[in-house]
Structure formats: C-alpha cells, structure tokens
Image 1 (cartoon, rainbow, N blue to C red):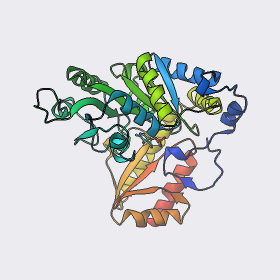
Image 2: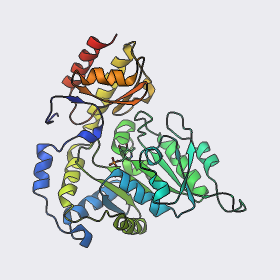
Image 3: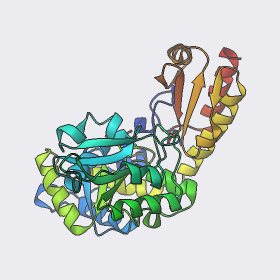
Length: 348
Ligand SMILES: Cc1ncc(COP(=O)(O)O)c(C=O)c1O
C-alpha cells in the first residue's frame, strides 16, 4: 500500500506514515464527545478494545508514546525510586530525561546483548532502599522495550519476558512494557499480545508507528493503575476533548493494519540480506526480525545518507557509521527493488 503524497522512498521511520483514504473516511465519520468529560464514545471504544486485546482491565488514550511512557513511569514510581532498563531504551535515550524531570527517578542501566536484557542482569541491577542503610535509591520499576528500537527491531522470547517479570515481582518492582511496536513483536514471534504481556503490570502501545495512525498511544493496565494514570495525564496537560477523531484512526488501524506488518518484516529482511552483500554495508542479520535494518557503513554514514538523499531515498544516519532503514505502510516491493537498484549504482 503506498498512498503517499511523495515519490521519495522514505525509510526514516515508521512514524512518517500518513492516514490512508480509508482511515481518513473512518475519522470523518467518527462520533465524538468531550473526552475530558468522559463522553467521547469512540475514545471509550478504543480504550476498551485495546485493554481487552491485551487482557488488561482498562486503557487510556494518550497523545504520544513518549507521554504514555512518561505517565506510566510516573504512575509506577515516586521521587527517589529507581527504574531498571536497557542502556538503549527509548525511555532513557529519547524521552528528554522525563524519568528524572517528571518522576524524580534515577535509572539503573543494563548492558543488554543487542538491547535485550536477561533475567540475571535485571536481578543484579535492582537496588532496594530497604536494608541499604539509606544508601540506595528504591528499585521500583523494571521497563522492557519490545520490539527494541536500537536493538534493530529484535524481540524478546516469551520465556525471557516471563522470567524478567518474575524477577521484578520477587523484588517488589512493578513491570512496564514500552510496546511502541508490540504488534510487530507479536507478528514476528507468533505469540499473541495477551500472552506476551500477561506478567506485566502496564503496556504502552503506539498506534502511530507501524499501524499507521496519525497520532496516539494507548496505555493499558489494571483499573486502579489507569485511574491514577488518568490523573497524571491531566497534570501533564494531556486531557483532550474531541479525541474520537483520532481514536477512529486507531480503531481503523487495529482492524486493517496489524496482519500486514508481516509484509514490512519480509521487506526488511529482503533489504537486510541484499545490503549485507555490498562491501559498503554490514548487517547483523540475527537482529532483523521485524521492520528495521541497522547497517554498519564503511564510509561515514552521513555521506551514505546524503548520496541516497540526492537519489530520492531518505533514511537516518543514526551513528557515525551506521544507517537505519525502516519499512512501513508506504514502502512497496517496487520501492525496495528501486532502492536496491540505486544502491547497485552507488556502492560496491
Ligand atoms: C521504542 C519507542 N518507544 C517510544 C517511542 C515514542 O513514541 P512517540 O514518538 O509517539 O512519542 C518511540 C518512538 O519512535 C519508540 O521507538
């Protein structure tokens, strides 16, 4: 499906997707209310539906993945607490230090293998205030990212997810999944999202990445957790009014854009395998499990990105010698072939 108002091939992120005509039609027809007053029926439907899909009691529609994570972190912690996550986690790297500024929490970073933490690493990283003669912060929350963004879109296996949650619980920690791309993980592993997130207290799900909605995330958890999260959303300025217009896009995405993620994954694998054949690029194919390809470059990645840019292909040079290619709703098989043909002309 292309439906993109540009003939450039845009691999920068799955966040660049634009609402399709059918999605816009669904938004146009949405019945709306005032969500701050709790009577937007489309928002209520979306929240209920996502909560049910994940086997949780309640859901909260939130403007962005960053805000949804921030609200989850703030709901789970109090100032002086500590959050355990991988060193590449989005909550640590790319959310403006919200864990510190908004939660007053510190972070215990884990050196995961390709961004994936092990239960033993989590066990060793949890520090509890109790019994430390006041020395330690209070390890209170373990946060897992699935799929891992900087880990190349790789996924946790179910046994590891379950064990990490078990370790967290044994140490009196709550558990949160940053599931910005959780449906990609479900498609790649064949584990449905209810089972995947069963042992976790909260999950943040993005509708605006691979699912192709313009805006929006849903945070799910227990009734009492979501009631508190609702209060934090208000305090963070995230209460909104006729948000049903956006919820309608989310509902359309859930109906039409989950199964097709498989195509994004297949295209990412095609790209990864082909790029790895060039002398210019090295791809760790073991990490290419979903819709992302991280490739090491021989020359500066900025030069590679610029060369491609001037040939109609957009992507990010994510590190001095690393580029990232992300497949999504607007990338077709023809785009993949055109990209590889451009590469054949530019690189050896
Ligand atoms: C893993 C992960 N979590 C959270 C987010 C934040 O989402 P948003 O851009 O909607 O704030 C992103 C964004 O790309 C992400 O990759």
